[in-house]
Length: 80
Image (cartoon, helix red, strand yellow):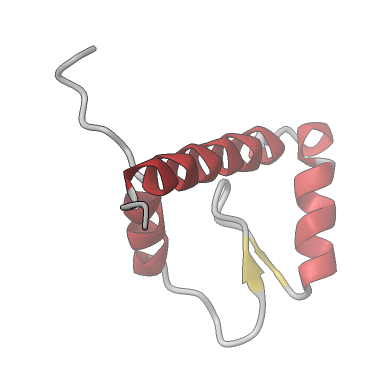
C-alpha cells in the first residue's frame, strides 16, 4: 500500500482535461456519458444507481478528496 502513488485533486483535474468534450454539453467524469444540460447531468448523478452506474459514489468520493486536499493546503499555508 505504501508503494501506491498519492492521488491529488490536481491529478484528477488533469486527467479530466484529456477527455474530449463537445462544445455543448456536460460530461459525467465517472461514466463519461455526455448530457445536453447541467440539470440532466445532475439528475443522472442523483439516480445513477438505478441506471446501473456508480456515478453518485464517484462524485461523493471526489468531493471528499477535494475537502481533504483543501484542508491540507490550509494547514500548509503560512500563518501571518
